[in-house]
Length: 312
Image (tube, rainbow, N blue to C red; front, side):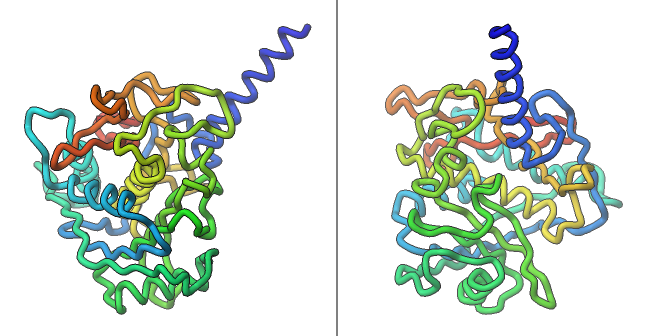
C-alpha cells in the first residue's frame, strides 16, 4: 500500500542519515555505547602549542570566535555560569587514564595555547588546497620547521580544502613526510557544503529535517567551524599518530568526537541536535559558557565513565 511504501522510505532516509552521520560505520551514536580502546600509541599532553594558518580572508568573526574557544578550554568564565567549556575539556583530559601504566587519580591538565599565527590573503597556492601539495607547504610556512607545534590550517569562505565535505568538515591528519606529523584542517561552511558543515545552524541537505539552531555568536560559519575544529582537536589530542585512542571498528579509526557526530544535547536524534540553551537577549543557541561570557555550541564526545556519547 502507499502508506507502507511511505513508511519504508522514511525508515530508509533515517537509516541513511544515521549511517552518514557516523562517517560510514555501523555504530549508532544515538543508541549504542561506543567501545573506545587505547592501542598503545602516545597522546598529546602538557602544553599543546597551536600554529594557525588563516588561509584567505577569514574575517575577524571567525578568528575571534575560534581563538576565544581555544582560550576557554583552560580559562574558565564566571563560576555562576554553568556548564562551562572547561567541564567539556576535563573529560578530554580524563582520556589519559586509559594510557597503559597511567598513574591513578586525577588526570594531568592539558593546556592548549595559540603560539603562532600567520595569514595568507593573496591566495598564493590558489583556492583549492591539496593535502599532498599545498598543505605541507603551508605547514612549513606557519611552523618554520618547529615539530613541537600542532599546525591548524583554516580556510576562508572562498577556499576549498581536499577532503572537506566528504563526511568531514574538519579533520586531523598526518603529513606524508619521512617523519609524519599531525595537523588539523578546518573548512569554511559559508559556501563550502553549508548543508552538511553548517548544520545545525543551517538546514541539512540530507536526512530528517529537524530544528535549525541560531549561532551563539551570530555568525553561522564561525560557530560551525568551532564545532568542527573542536572535534578535530579532540581526535588530534587523543590519537595524534593514529595509533592511540580510537573506536574498535577496524575499518575506520573513529576518535572520541567523530564517533559522537550529530549530538549536542539530551534527546538528540537524526536531524535533531538535542536540548540546548538559548540566549534570551540574542536568541543564539549554545550548550557551554566560555571565558569572558562567550557562548559556544560544543559537539558530544565519548565519556569513558559511561562509555557513551556525552554533552555538557
